[in-house]
Length: 84
Image 1 (cartoon, one colour):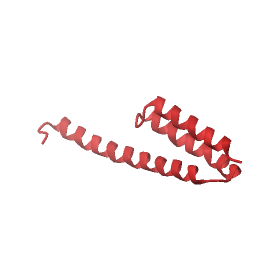
Image 2 (cartoon, rainbow, N blue to C red):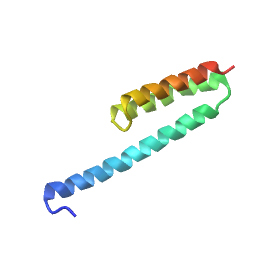
Image 3 (cartoon, rainbow, N blue to C red):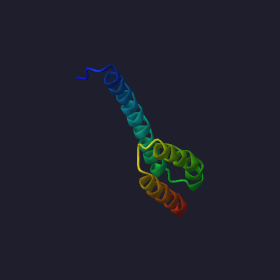
């Protein structure tokens, strides 16, 4: 265990950040799953901007890499556009 004050604080901060990142990551994954389950194009089109926004926020916070975010957004947009 850490002995210095600053190191103890860093451990607390990193634990807090880790929990926050896990929460936002899981929330985004669930939103992606729900978007993929939608079969109606209008409903999916309405939901898409919100999910893309969540993905952008993850990339901004460095929870996921910016290229992974771009790939996810591209795949989701294609899948929504293919819906009949």
